Length: 140
Image (cartoon, rainbow, N blue to C red; front, side):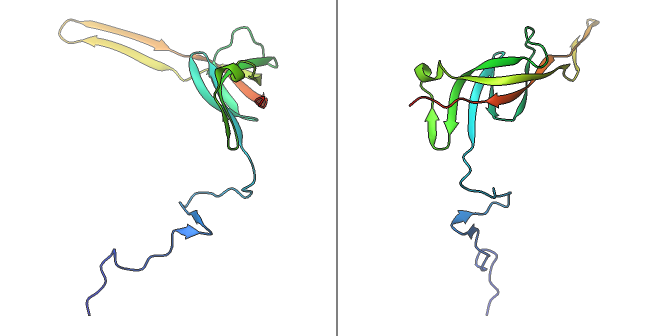
């Protein structure tokens, strides 16, 4: 008899209790509904949930301990996804300012060959760390 080729051998089942096992951590409680929102701050979009600490571009008007409101682009509450701009206009994510700090330094080097042109410049972006305290539910 010939030996079985690699693909013909029997492998352990990848399905465990009706769920695909990808080798990652499985949440202990499956009934837990994770509410998160996509918010806009400083021209960027961030995915946030209650309790998350997020770095956004510096909010110069806010001091440490102040509460800020972030405009919402999308809210996901379990299976309910809210993306209607008329509904989202009334939903503001509440966050508390934790810290103001500078990011890592980046070096900007400009060089042109055979002309002796060299310029060196550095930059450190200023950030504000905020902790999300509340994501209001969308009115249905």
